[in-house]
Structures are given as structure tokens and as C-alpha cells.
Image (tube, rainbow, N blue to C red; front, side):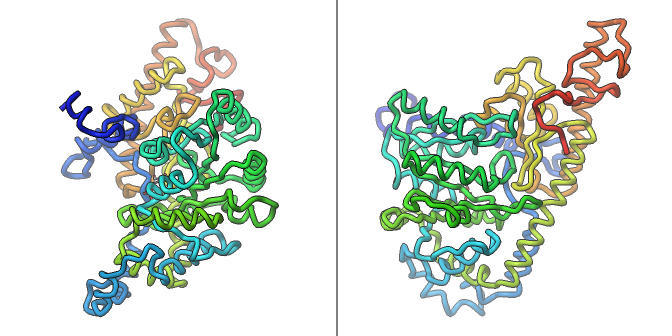
Length: 479
Ligand SMILES: Cc1ncc(COP(=O)(O)O)c(C=O)c1O
């Protein structure tokens, strides 16, 4: 193959810009080679690198059982088979787009409404993100993106469109806030390099931070893109994963309260996370720009949602009672799981970034790095994958500008597997702590471990030999 195939195939087919060589995807491969199973492979790798929401399948299954008419593959629903099998209009089934619009409004607290005519279908948020890039930017144009960001963006936003991403560096010194200053720095740098900035893409709630943007930050972002006359794409794929306060604020709410050019605002949505249906490939572009709606509709021919899926979801999402109770129960279960996992981390004094949403937690293992470099972060990540046998994702794969952070997903496994994962973490931290104590003893033979005489690495050891973060650390403590 090699050089021959390079000549035979296109540049897109042969370039390396899909991002699949990043550690984020390597971790998945390690899991696939040796997947954990409680009885068949109890020493296998536990998959904690997959942001999937598998906590409420029983509720969906119950609904399917009680609503056989919703499927064209049952005796009760088969009479719709021919109509549905034949349907291929890129406007979508009217009952589907209208149910989606209602659902999107419900998820956003009923404080905003959505026009079904502005809904464009796509193959998941993956396809939706690419589609909006094709509508807004040309080859070589750029989008600003605050760090840390979803690694799949490199594939989804750049690979086939040839759009560039310009990182807006955010760090833990101010809780990864997207400040006006950070936006200006990134924008200015792009301009100095003669790069045409077409927009800013944000993820709210954030993957990987698991936090929601407050109204003030959203307003300042909208003001920024208005002043520069660039687009704002808001990926709101995790909108219904908010499990505790503060309440979720969508950009759709903010633009109702301020003056702004609506032609610049676009929302990306999907049912992959909020309902836990990544396999259904239901992605949505919701644009306030008429021209984008018109050309995006044509482009959506390349990634329509199957009419069978539309048909079934139209019934499910129209069932207001079900939707209401599903959303409540889903966030209750996410909250419970989050608490269980983060308590486990606290017990071994691992700090994490405080979060209120998402299917993951942003864990800080900086104190375990020998040096603050990406190489050391990746070394530690290899130990976690190969020895601790947990597939977590290193911060560098999210383009985080600080080393030592790892994203750990907690909603794609069952309670028992969470226990096994926490046990492995406890054993690992115990060993690492022991190593550090021995090191300290070697360096300072006369050292006495007491509060008053403590004089060793801040951020490393507590008087009880636990790994801690210093009270002076800019890093956020576990809460
Ligand atoms: C922020 C973000 N956007 C988009 C996607 C892709 O989602 P989908 O499965 O709907 O294509 C993901 C998946 O993890 C994500 O985290």
C-alpha cells in the first residue's frame, strides 16, 4: 500500500487529519484489545473514555414495550411501514421536527421555543458540526475554540472541510473561564497570521469540564462575536445532562435578552447524550440564519436521519409525560453516579474540577507527574491504561494548555464496574503514595512527618501520606 495508495487516493483519504491517532482514540483501541468483563475478563481494561449515557435504558425499553405502535416492525405499527419506508424528504417528517423542537424547548426549561422549520437533520452532532462548517467557512478559514475541547472536533470540523481551529487558551487559574481577554488574544494572533476567522465554537455544557456557562459569560461571548461579525456555533449536545445547580442557560435564551445579529447564531444538538442514543445518529443544526437553513437543508441530503428513527422518535418525544419523567430521572441518576464516583476519588484525595453536568469528570493528577510536560502526562496515561487498566483520556488530547488533567467517563458502565474502577484507583494511588514517601525518606532521612515540620513538595503529600493539593494551589479542590 504505502506510497502507491498515496498516489491512488485523494488527499483527504490519505492525510492524517482525522485525529484518530490521538491518545483519545488509542485508549479505545487498548480497551477493544482487552475489554473488562466481571466474570470472563475481570482484569481487562475498563472503558472510562466513552462519553455515553447508559443509565436510563430501562426507562426507554419500558416505553417501547408500552408503545408498540411507535415501531413499524410490530403488528400494531406495521400499517405505517410503506409510508415510512418510502419517505425521504430532507425537511423531515413534520411530526418529527415538531417533536424535536418541543423536546429542545423542554430541555432548556421551557424558557425558549424553537421553530421546527429551522431544524436541519444530520448524522449525529458529528455530521451537524461538519455541515455547519461547510455552510460558514471555506478551506483555510478558521474557527476559534476554547480549550480544553472535544477531541473529535478535529475530525468533525476540519478533516474534510479543511477549516482550521485556533485554540482560545483557558486554564484552571480562573476555572477555565472563557474570558473576553482570551478570545481577543486568539483572534488577534490569527489575524496577525493572516488567518480569516469565521467564527467561534463553544460547547455548553462543556466536554470535558462538565460545567455550564453562566449567563454573563454567554452574553460576553455573544457581544464578542457581534463586534467582530463572526459566527457563534454552540454545541449543546449535553444540554439535558445537567444534574445539579446552576440551572442550564442555552444561547437561545441569552439572545432573547440582548441585541444581537441572529444571522450569526447556530446551535448544534443531538440525541446521543441526552437520551443515550448515539447509534440512532440523530443530529440537528438549528440556525437562526435563513440562508444557512436553506443551503444546510440541501447539504443535509448527505446525512438524513432514517425515516424509521424519525417515526419512532416522533411518538416518543411527543409523549410529554414520558419526556418529563425521563429528564428528571436521568438527571437524578447522573447526579447519583457522579456523587458515587467523585466520593471515591475524594477518599484517595484526588482532586477534580467541580462540575454540574456531563457524563464525565475532569480529574487532576498533576501531582503524580515527575515533570509538568506532555510527555510525562502521556507516560502516566500509559501506566493508567496498561497497569491500572482504566481507559481514561489525557488532557493533552483535549488540547488542554495545562498538563495533568484526565477525563474520566462514569455513565457508560454499571455500579459494580464503578466499584472495580475505584478499587483499582485506590490501589494505584496507594502504591504511588508509598513510592513518594520512600523518595522523600531517601532525600531527607531526618524528616519527620508532622504538620509543623512538613517541608516537602506541596501538592504531593499530606501528613497522612495522602496525595493532596496545596491550599495555595491555583488548582481547584475536590468538593
Ligand atoms: C461536544 C461533542 N460534540 C459532538 C459529539 C458527537 O456526537 P454524536 O454522537 O451525536 O455524533 C460529541 C460526542 O462525544 C461531543 O462530545
